[in-house]
Length: 204
Image 1 (cartoon, helix red, strand yellow):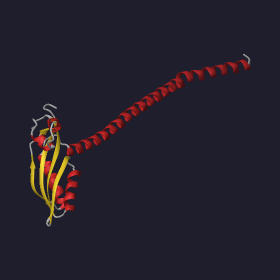
Image 2: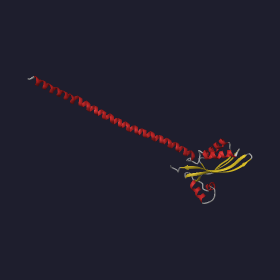
Image 3: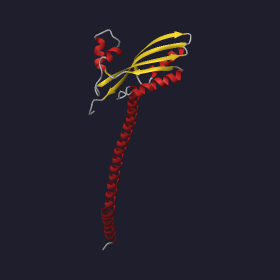
Image 4: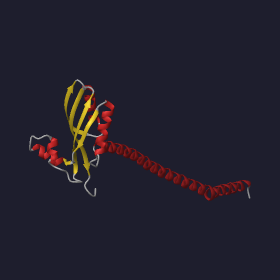
């Protein structure tokens, strides 16, 4: 057999062996590597989706915390119960900060906001008088509590500061109407105001 033919046959056999090696070893390895990369990409995408969900929940939690803070501030201004203690605490704190002496604190029974408004619109009577004519039933929603406060102050400036402190809250007082008298020993005042409450109906 000619030498050239032998070399040609040997080259063909070598190429065939190489192709067989590629087909039997390299190709499966490449396919396996491609599958692993695809799985890794799927896992990464899944992780990204989960991380986005976690980030979204964290943002919602932050918003929830802000809403709870806002709700707490609103509850301090207008509580969900006709609580007299929050009103008396506001009056006591304002008096302590301004050097005013509270000689009388007289809250009235809670009254329905709607009934009081209707009574006031139908007459020239003050809001507190209209409110006293319309007692509120428990759980009727918006109510107001008429309050009368008698105070003495060493000066008119102290009395003014006391009124400003009442208006500052945190307990919300509406329609603060002082009747002030001044004398050589300072100032006295009878103050009427309305404390608001939002009482949920039964079952809410």
